Amino acid sequence: MLRRVVELRDLGARAHLFDAAGDDLGFCHLPVPVARGDLALVAGATFRVLDVVDDLAPGAAIDMLAVVVRCG
Image (cartoon, rainbow, N blue to C red; front, top):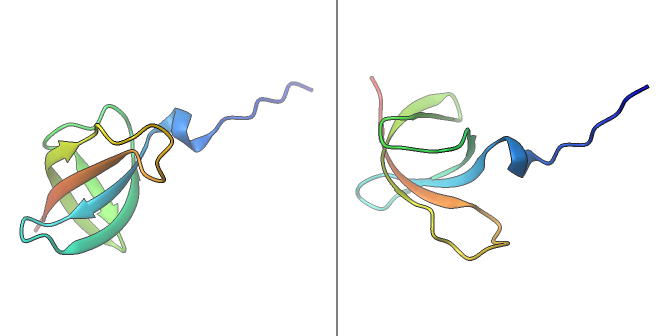
């Protein structure tokens, strides 16, 4: 039997989401590379990525910060 262990980091990025006013919207996992216009789902709400800050320290608890706007 072949078994492969994959870390979540290998599948995408852990993102901390904020709206344009700076309100904390929570965390989500996004496929990489994350770019403007991508969609994020948090607690049943859909958001569109407006901007990404991805130059955080290596090994940080999150991979990026994203500014988003709610869709719909």
